[in-house]
Each structure stands twice: as C-alpha cells, then as structure tokens.
Length: 170
Image 1 (cartoon, helix red, strand yellow):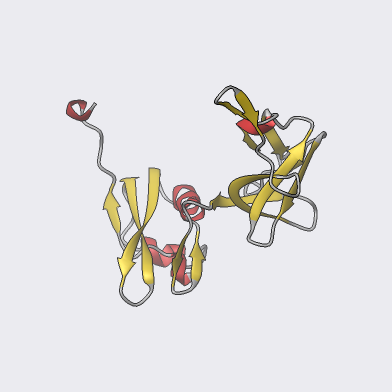
Image 2: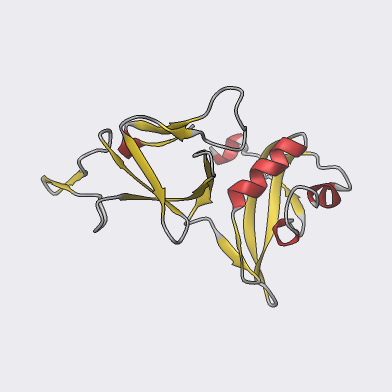
C-alpha cells in the first residue's frame, strides 16, 4: 500500500498476489499524478483541509490544487504505483539520482539482514557515493550479487555494521 496521514491513510493498494514492488492502484475518491520531477501529487475526498496552526487552517495545496507529498514514484501502464523514496533522501552520484530506499529494499530482500541503511559518502569524482550500514551478515560476494539487481552506480562502495543501541544510549 501507499498512504499518508493527510489522505486519511491509504491512497493505493495492491492485490495480495500482485507485484511486490508496487503499491497498487489508486483507491476510490482519491487521485494521484506524478509531476515532471517524479514527485507524487495527490488529491481527493479523503484529503485533509489543511494544517492547523496559529488558530487557523492553512491550505496544503499547491497552485494547481494538488498536495505535493515529497515522495518520488512512477505509475506503470497498468496504473500501478511504484514508490522510489523521499525527495529529501535522494542524492546525486555522477549525475545519477540515487534513491536509498530502493537499495535498502533490494539488500533486505536479497540477503539475510534485518536492517539496511544507505547513506551518501562524499566523493571527489562523483559528488557522492552510496555506502550501507546493515544489521546482519552480508556474504563476501554481496556487491557482485547486487549487480544483477541494481545499476552499477547504485551498488554501495562498502558495508558497515549498523551500530546496535546499547542500554546506555537509551
């Protein structure tokens, strides 16, 4: 599924036997479109009136009466939504957009890891490169395994153990 609080939770839902990489088709009383930057825009009967602060309700709509979600995605030919990640998380490496959430999902689906967190590492030639922190053990050939699932620029340069929270840090 795909949803957000401003839309009373759900926007799209896939069938249980549907494509696991998709968030499904848009539900009734909701509209969705992807703008020229890849941002998901929504509107419909379930959209909230706005944000309440300073004693007033302030509209959340853009000039075209859509709510910009700050999420990135695409809709395929059959109307299925795929969410790539957050605009705030995307970074550029050698002119290519990298979506950490996509890489994290592939790593978790491919290997026996509980968590994968991809971040950008500054790079003098590419501006930034992805690295990953994982909880679990990656096999020695993890980067080679990812070559069939990710584009070369998306494959993390290296992997680190995800620091575990200790009772002292809580």
